[in-house]
Structures are given as C-alpha cells and as structure tokens.
Length: 126
Image (cartoon, rainbow, N blue to C red):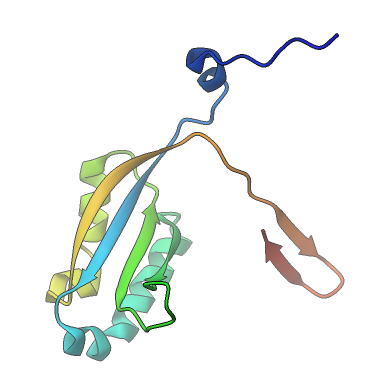
C-alpha cells in the first residue's frame, strides 16, 4: 500500500526547485518616449536575452483585449542589486519612458515542456 502524501510543508518544499529569479514590473510614464524608442528597447532586450539575463519578457494586457503599454520581465541575476543594474541599462528606463519595480521570486513549482521538431525546425513551448 503506497504511503499517504505528506502535508508537512518542510517535506513538501524539501525537493522544490528554489530557483531565484527577479520579476520586473514596468509601468508606462511617457507613451511618446515609449513609441519613439521601441527599436532601441527591443535591441537591448534581445541582447540581454542572448547574454542569458532575460528569461521571459513582454507586454501585460489588462485582460479585456485593450492594448496595454506596461510589461513584465523575468530576470536572471545573482542578486537584487545585479537585477537593478541590468534594468538600469534598458533604454526605456534610461529615457524615463517607463518606471519599474523589482521583486525577488522563488520558483518552487511548475513545469515547462519544450518540443523541438528536427524535421521542420519548429519549437513549441507549453
């Protein structure tokens, strides 16, 4: 007979990933600066992603289909100070187009599935 699953948080969390990441929440301050500098921001984001600093990033919609100019980024960094130093390099932040808040995030649960199909060079993330 299999053992009953534990309800003890210490036991449940013992095997958790405890992966440290930093969540950046961006808020639009000046839409005109945002639109005028989107290319510089995207080039910076792509370079930071390719350097391994950006895990996931994109705009945040309010849920009703309205276009939203705010965003969320998951940053890989050794510390909150390092995450701030990285964030300060974003052209949007340098120019004052957006303000941001950083929070430390401990990832304990979840799953990520990646399918790479060699026959047609497609990638699917679920």
